[in-house]
Each structure stands twice: as structure tokens, then as C-alpha cells.
Length: 242
Image (tube, rainbow, N blue to C red; front, side):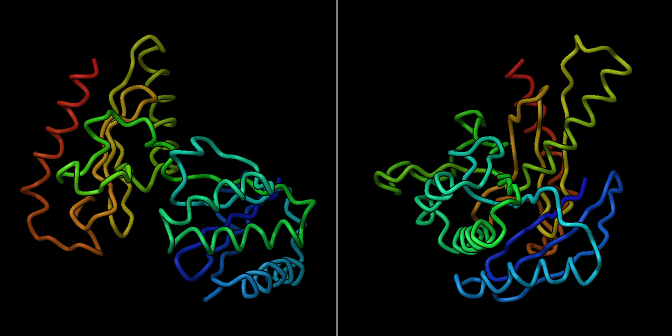
């Protein structure tokens, strides 16, 4: 099976082409400054021109990674016009990230309608965080009538890592015991998630600069000193859920 993956940022689009069971892509590349609808249409055409130039088969499916929208789309969905219309309603909540994703997805629907396009949402994994983990350390009245929900932003990675860990745990201990898992995504802005069984119960992620572990984008020299506190938070959350 041949899979095309698409990961839009605020301005650019990163793509990779995978074939068969090989975990390494046959090729990857970045298309720059494709935010507008015209640029997105040109990018969609250029993607398939590259696939033809490299003599790769037409992909069986495409998957687009989207940061926001997980509270409404808690599992992957096919990119039909109805789902794209629903996603467009969320643009006010993510005016930087969602427009490019919508433009690219719409361009692919127009130019490659026979290609199944799946939308996978990073924040979907965190949609059911416990209520105390959903907020920020701010006065509840500061946002007025707008509901602000704190998410982690590496849900796809955490979900895959936790599934792999559960498989290994079941092989060793059987399926009756529910494992407590700490998943760490070493992105440029690292993120930790505490997972009990298949439920995420704590995440260090969030939209403000105060969330996330110190990393490339938030270099804080006291990482070693903060680590015990984060681990204690995860253990406490797991203990309360048990």
C-alpha cells in the first residue's frame, strides 16, 4: 500500500511518500508558502508531478495531520465536503494553522477526487482529558463566554507509542492489568503525557508558552530540577484515576 502523508504548518507543507511496510519514506519534501487557495491548488498539482517524476505509483490514500479540531473530530475522518465545512467553522479558534490545511485539503478534493484523504487530528487524543486538566491557571471569567480547552499537540505520536507499550505489556503480564504509561514526544517543543490503559489523564502540552517541556523553542536550564515534579504530577493523576 502506498501512502502520502501531508503535514501543514502555518505557511508550508511537508509531505512524505511511504510504500509497503517500510517505515522510512521513499522521499520527503517541503512546499513553501502555500497558504492561499491559489497557492494550495498549485501545490496539489506539484505534489503529483513529483510523484510521477519519481516514477512512484499513484498513492492508495493520503493522510493529513491537523493540529486543531480534535474536540470536534475525536477520531480520523474522511475529507468530504461536509467534514471540511465543519472544520472551517473552527477557523476562528485556530486562524493560523487551519486555513492552510483547509486550502490544501480542498485543492486535493478538487484535483484528485478519487484519492481517499484522511484527516487525523493531534488534539483528538486529548479531548477527554479530566476536567481539572483541561484548563489554564487563569481566572475562569477572563475568557467570557468562550470555552478554552487545553490540549496536548502530539496526540498521534502519544497514541501510537501507548498502543505499542500496551502490546508489549500484555505479552509480558497479560491483558487483565491496565498499564500506567509515561509517553514523551521529543519534538522541538517536547511534550509528556500520562496514560492509564488507553486513556490520557495528564499532558504538559498547551497553547501558552508556559506549557510543554523545555526544549528547542523554550530553553530552560533547570530541566533536571523540574523533572521530579512532572513525574509526581503524572503519578498523582494515575493514582486518583485508579
